[in-house]
Length: 116
Length: 111
Image 1 (cartoon, rainbow over the protein chains, first blue to last red):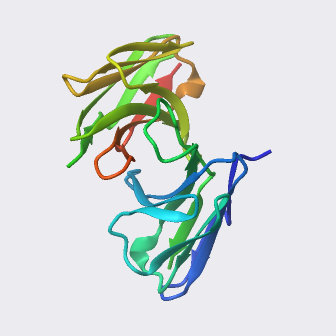
Image 2: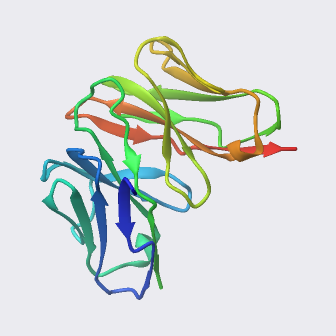
């Protein structure tokens, strides 16, 4: 059973389009994240949700809107896609958003977004 | 602010030992993680340190010195499958717990 799953795995689209990426975790975790990994391999936090509530929003353009219908799902909608949005987007989850020892993150397989 | 530095690339020989260093600056240190990421795949958790000293897990060990803002990941008996990127990540408790990732060290293991 996949712990953290994302769909789609690949997304190729034109500039200006709107697209969504879905993420689900079956680990019973409270906290979910979206990361962007660009061509230089920097993994940068975009958003974090704890029990469906937004807790981290890292200076991400308004075109990116996360939605968490329940604590097992965190989707990412992107409006008016730009060339610079091309990257791999990773969803992740952790037990919760506290600093207890460990509390490592489990990552989904990633969605490779290419904007033409 | 936060800053994490690690070498961009390293090369080592199968069967050898390699040490990947990481230095960090953060105002609210709350633990350091190492993740492994194979090309085209997701990062996977390797180790966690919050107190000074060495944590050993099979062929992998991780060391932390909080006073020096320094950690290393030690890989012993290198295997070809260890060729991957190794990401150093620091959890900061300032304004809520947030994990900041370094750019990663690409390790090439040669025969």
